[in-house]
Length: 580
Image (cartoon, rainbow, N blue to C red; front, side):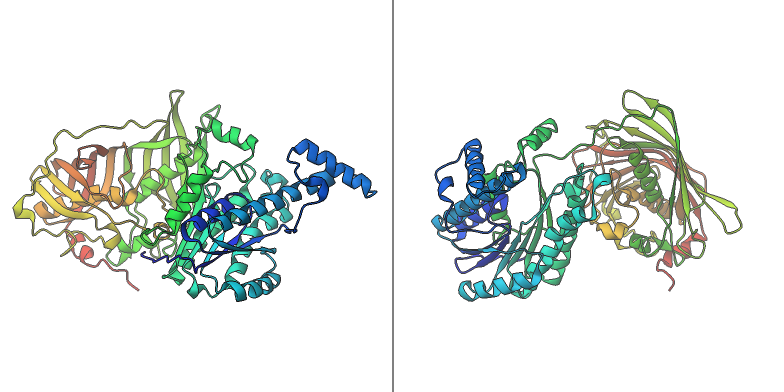
């Protein structure tokens, strides 16, 4: 989405949590860039001067001695809690004063308001008086946040409410104080915890993920406003204590230097920058630590209800007027489930995959589908094998078996394999072949990734492919983890094209002897499918295939995939819209 973030010296930026921490550093950097106006919001009261006994003292131990002496002088008992509270307040005062001074030195104008952003009426009243002198607000940076770290079993409702309110209620209240259509930008300070999670921060992760999703809604509602939720990794400052620094060091996570992070925000708001509504800023991704193997091989049972409404993508995979679950989506379902049993292990292959009874999204759809997983082999070298069966039960108690396979997970998937028979030249005779017309394939927009058939003979097919990104909502209950079923579906599509071309029959996937994935086949990138036709048995066709990029690096290899063909499928392929 193109937006024109126009910041200049007349801009008025409202910043929650802007008096201190990393938000303050970003504010100072914006002042250096644009010499604009700022309204900083914070909970701390800003006094005109420090107590006489505190002036010129910056040593923590000495300051606390003076605080204790002040309590005694006033005839009050100096408890540790009271002393720490005064000490924290003093540090906050000093940090806010430094922020204001540095903004002014950079050429910016600044007003500081002591206001609780979760109190809407008070916030509106205080802002109204300030806006009269600064002018209307043109941008919002919502950096306020509160932590209440505890393991979830120790969390209280008050902990949750405190953390949630600062992020979500705070944002709603900020937006209630302005006319959003007048805003050039809205920046939300989220956290990498929303994506990866973190022990003791379930409420913080939830609140930040809601911020992320809110950014998309705001961007859609106000298309001329640049909206972004920044999932910051750990900064070298702010809420990151020395203890946390040690933890991040053990995870090999580099902290974001204050200067670097602040400049990233400035770059995000430059007029020429066309960002998305959500971005993650980290030195590196966090890899899940492999979960220890269970002491004994185990079996697992998972249940799932499927609906057409929850899975919009299947509307583009319909024939005979009915939506059908793609075979590759059933493999993704199985692979995703196995990965959840052992986090840190990745899907590598499935063997002896069979479509026993496909799932159709019509009146035959079961109220519940069962996925049974059984460990059949484990190795300390980082390899686990599962046997999987997907089934359901009719209203009369009759079991229906839908898919079966064996799945292999690895800690480290082998990579950098290259396809030796690289030939990407175009056969001119195939330029007029359009697979998604005249019933050759029934697939609609979200599955239409075959861009050109480059080569096709009685024993081989090569296709150039690229599939547009399918948004997460459309993926529904079949999201991409390490296996992309939507791009992988093009393997079967290519075999269906070959069958139609040489036998004039519609065909459907039936089974796969072996599928190995070395890298996920990506959206929005060109790749190639090469098929070798192994056997033609009138109604059953077998092929092996390889998926690779323009340099020949292999994404996936598949052995003995079988489709079953029938003349009765031909008219069904033409009827590829849902009835009703």
